[in-house]
Image (tube, rainbow, N blue to C red; front, top):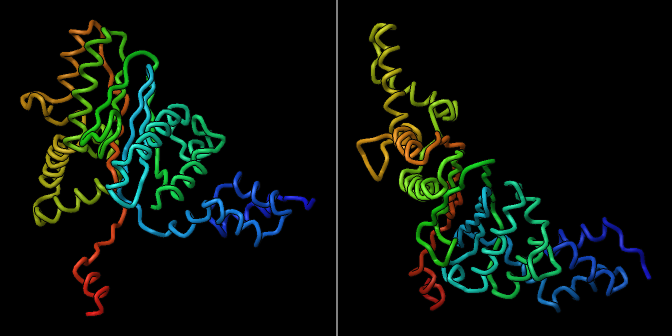
Length: 307
C-alpha cells in the first residue's frame, strides 16, 4: 500500500475543498491515486462542496450559547435565507455555538473541534452539509466572553429558533451581587446593544482612525477659529460623539433619561454589589460581506433567449 503523506492530503484538500480526514480516507481507499481519490470523493458526494465554495454566502444564522459564566457567539453563513430556515442547518449552527464556548473566540480552534455525534471536525461536518443541502456554507467567525463572578447576558434578534437569529449579543457583567438582578440587566442591556450598535465601550476604545476622522470633521466645520476655541469645540464634539456611540455613555434605550453607566450603578445598588461591564459582543449576520445583487428580470429574459 502506498504511503499517504501529509503533502498528498493537503494537495487533495486544496483541489477538492473537502476536509482533511475525508481526503486521507479517500487516498487510503485508492492506494494514494490522486485522480481516483478525487473520483472517490465525488462518488461520496463530498467533492460537490468544492464547486460551491466560490459562491457568496451572506445569509445564514448567528448562534448564541451561554453556560454559566461563559458565553459564545458564532456566525455560520449560507447562500440563502431559505437554508437558514432548514432544521438541519439550525441544529448544526446550535451545535457549533455550544462548541464555541470552549474555543475562546478562536475560529481555527472551533473549526477543528469535533462536531457532536460525528467523527468529523466542524469544518468537515460543514462540508458534508454543503454536499447534502447543495449550498455554500461556512463558519465565518466566533467570539466569546467570560466573567469570574457575575453573569453573561444574551439576546437574539429576529430569532429563527432558540439562540439563533440575525443579530446575537453578549454582555459580560462582573459582580458578586444578586444573580437574578444581574441576569435581568444582562438581557435588557443586550437588547440595548442590539438596538444601538455601539462603536466601543468608551471613547478610549474607539479606533484611532475613527477619532481622527471625527476631529477632522470638527476642524473643517470650525476652520478659522482661534486654536484655544477650536480645542474646546473638539472636546465638546467628542463628548457628544461618545454619548451617541459609546456604550457606557449612551442613553439607555429602556429609560432615555439615564445613561448606561447610571443604570449599572442603580442596579448594582439593588443587587447589593457594584457591577462592572467587562465587555460586549454584537454579531450581525452578513456584516461586511459584499452581496451580489441579481437582476432577476434579466436572468428570466436570458433564460427565454431574449437577452
